[in-house]
Image (cartoon, rainbow, N blue to C red; front, side, top):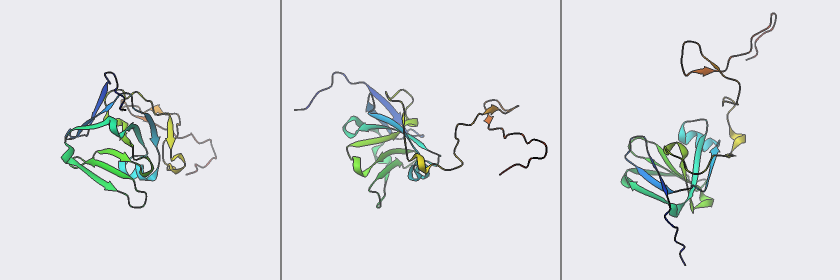
Length: 159
């Protein structure tokens, strides 16, 4: 017996160029930050933030023919991206074939879940921001930086 949802709301997302659009049923199932090497390389960023939804609650609304797919033979996972602009769209894990994981940044509105979890935290690189105090960079509005500690007289700076 199929359970019908009473008027489910949806949330839309899209790639950078707009060729691929999709929607998910609100709320998403969960959200997390992925620090694994694979996600770092796939996104070209220190980590990726995803929202996970049941596969049956995800729909491509335009541009399905623009979606390219990469399957990792060693892990069994798959990553889909826009063939025009290269935006990562979907991450499918081999052990969770019933779930679709979508980069959180592709949604302009709320997804119903905050990223509370961290995956692969032990794989994060040493150069990743670690929550140090940042201060405004004088003369550059909107830019902050991690001011190095001032040396005391006679100290050498450790690099």
